[in-house]
Image (cartoon, rainbow, N blue to C red):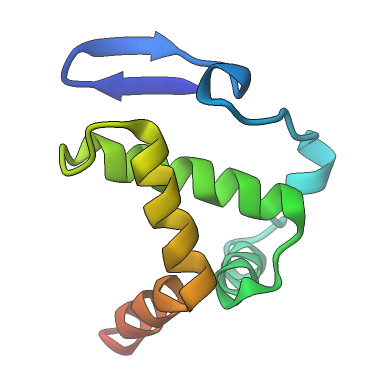
Length: 100
């Protein structure tokens, strides 16, 4: 994963983030934008596979960490997990959709 922060760019492996590697076959994102959107919504509803959740959580955690509101990646990761598991992530998606 290419990580860009205020300190610069670097490549990090899942292991460096304390996570396991996932197979590309397990995280297929769809062939069309509509299919990708349906898959993403399914994940945010809490119905994603382990691999799908792992990727979404890792990306969400990195985004949260880059805001500067979390000193440690693990803290940002736990916030991402809580958002997904509580349904808040899905609620935010629904609010964004309603704005269109």
